Image (cartoon, rainbow, N blue to C red; front, side):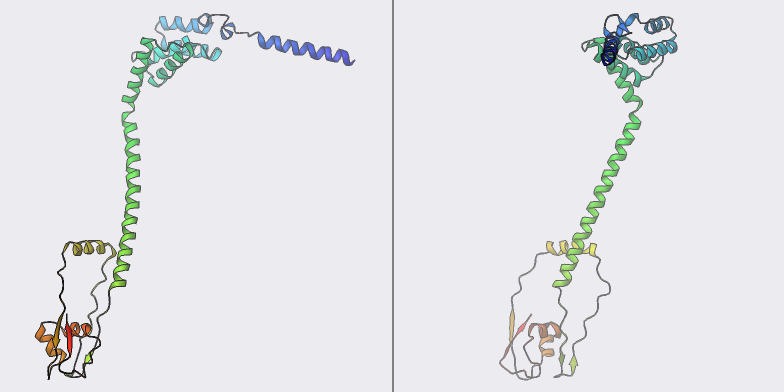
Length: 261
């Protein structure tokens, strides 16, 4: 029983091997010329009769039977590349390139010229679409770069504004009981400068060269007051008081030197 079973299995296996090795389509295995295939021959006949739509149909059937039929690709490429027949330059470009690959005729001058011509026609037909796609991509890239640059400038401006507010010091308010007057309170700024204005203002200040300041002194005399000295020196009382924070305005002694800003 088992011996008969293995004989049946061996026979089936041998039949499968023989069936796979014997291709029913000899033009696929190379035993026959693909041009002799019925669909291909019918396509050539329709092409000679200028019935190009029927020729395309049968060339496509020939490729369904044998996808490696290079001549069928060539026939389709020639029909689709002719503007007087059925101009489909995308199909023409594809089938002509497949013909070169399958046939190995990379030096075929006529086919290479057709490939270049169909490629140029494709570029001409789709130039507007390609240009729009490229332009949209460039605009989108520029928009992203502008957004990143704007964020960087805003961040830098905020940092400069924070640094400038830390460096600034409030004016000292010191009363002067000697003459019964008091320093005028510092006037509040009318508006807080915008962060985006800080770089421009700092750049403008950096351009102006600063004049070196030479410190001056004044020797107190009998009857002097800070208000009187400030008026004589052409400065404000607040500036003179800020330059001499250690001087007691109630005890001005003759002969003491004070700084004049």
